[in-house]
Amino acid sequence: MESVTCIMPTTASRRRFMPSAVLYFLRQDYPGAELLLLDDSPAPMPELWPETAPIQYRYGLGPFSSLGAKRNYACAQATGDIIIHLDDDDWYAPGWISRQVQVLQEQEADICGLNELCFYKPEQQLAWRYKYGYNHKPWVAGATMAYRKKVWERHPFPDKHIGEDNHFIWSAGSKIVAHDYTNGFVSLLHDHNTSPKYTFDPQWGPIPLSQIQDMLGADFLRYA
View 1 (cartoon, rainbow, N blue to C red):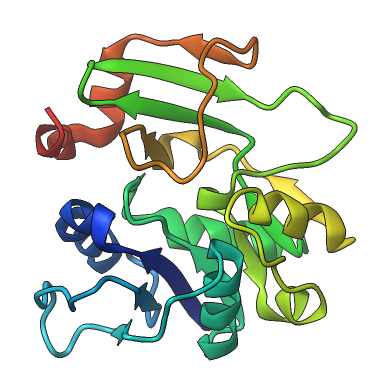
View 2 (cartoon, one colour):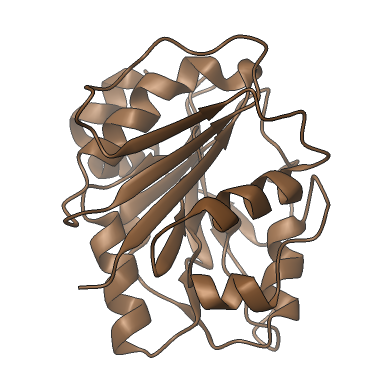
């Protein structure tokens, strides 16, 4: 069984998401996965996990010049053969890590993730499905990305705050697989998203809120 390190950069403006983020990691069913949590907040967060949890909390390391620099630090510290992005503000199903590893192994992929994904804006109770429409150029969303550490070692993230994940994907020269576990992930829209979301673009389409409710199940109440 291949070892997995999940990386999760966070900061003070996103502190309110951390109880859910930690819960979603601790519920994962893949044995032995660890979480590397990088926090550049002015003050450390209260401990939200038991001492025995496989979470490595790194505080007081910044300021980092960019999100790309923070991801590079996390990847360098990762002990796993496989690195998986877990964003602090998004929802992940309990089988998410297992499915990511399965795709990498069965498809002999270097990078995998989703190119079709759901977005939910709790403040307005609105939801969308995004479908990537440029099939000539493979792509997966950064928040859904999994890759082998050796891929990162060859092509680290650029020192950029926005778009560092796209640059990583397109410069790595690797086999990229977009899988179909679209019910395993929901991206949350809020005032502190790292990159803007243009929901009026043709790749975006509104979906009934009931689809998000079905995906999240009891977790929907955490946002309602």
